[in-house]
Length: 180
Image 1 (cartoon, rainbow, N blue to C red):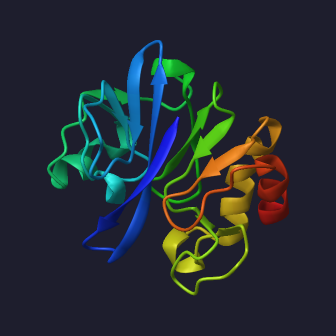
Image 2: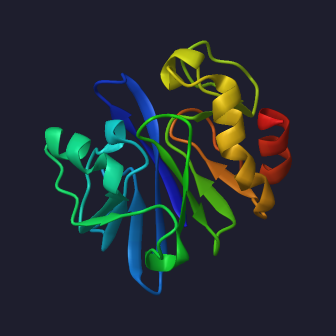
């Protein structure tokens, strides 16, 4: 597994990207300035279409929004369907955003619903926090917490956020502290 950051013009900051090599090929998650060609790209939220390559995977509900951003989803799926590399997808209360579970890496790949230390807006030293309430509206932060609770059943070691520092150890404890 590899996580790298790249400068995002619109965000005007470094953003996190993830790649993992599996029996099903090289999987990218929200890539930007990717170091190689991907077999599969997974998108967490339509804002993160970035440099999608190879077969592009996204929940069916995101297909139209991604097309409007110039990204053609080759493999739309429903949450709960089997995905390459054993990846599992979880819905969130934020409209148009999902979280991916990489069981082989014991890692969550998160778009915007969780932020790492140092992430804008209003950067903090907290290792993990919820995104601002306005990002999930009309849902509430309580709705977001409830939607993330199923993740507490996973043996999470790492939480690979797009914004801020990733959580490299004790991910389950950090996740619990953030959403309970």
